[in-house]
Structures are given as structure tokens and as C-alpha cells.
Image (cartoon, rainbow, N blue to C red; front, side, top):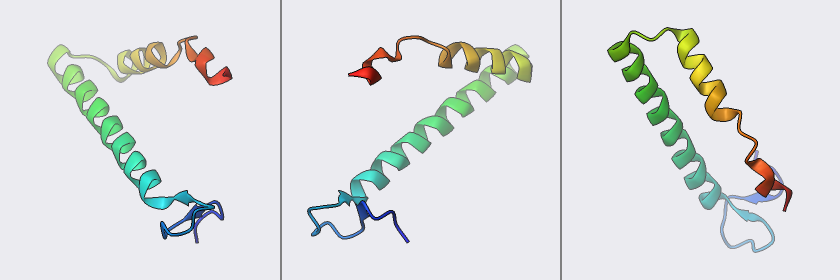
Length: 71
């Protein structure tokens, strides 16, 4: 069962188009897999530890530039 605001059929104008959400989700997941594969490559190439990669992930995700969400 889908969320009530999401319609699987695109003929319902009151809901959100399921196909658009699905495409965006697939793109996001692909980008995340690609990023993790790149980190794994760096880990093997440069002998990085899991802690090194965790520190990098924290650094990348710990930015204060998310003010545009407050619009």
C-alpha cells in the first residue's frame, strides 16, 4: 500500500506522481552506491581504515550550508 498522497496512476491530479518519486529514488540510490564504491576504491588503494572513511563521511555531511532548507 502506498502513502495516500502518492498515487501509482498518473491520472490522479491530486496525488504525487509515483513514477517521478521512483525515478528520483533510483537516481539517489545509484549515486549513493557510486560514492560508496569510490570510497572502497580509496580505502584499498591508499590503505585507509574504516575509521578514516567514517571521518571523511562525517566531514562531508557536517556542513552548515543547509540554510537553503529554511526558505
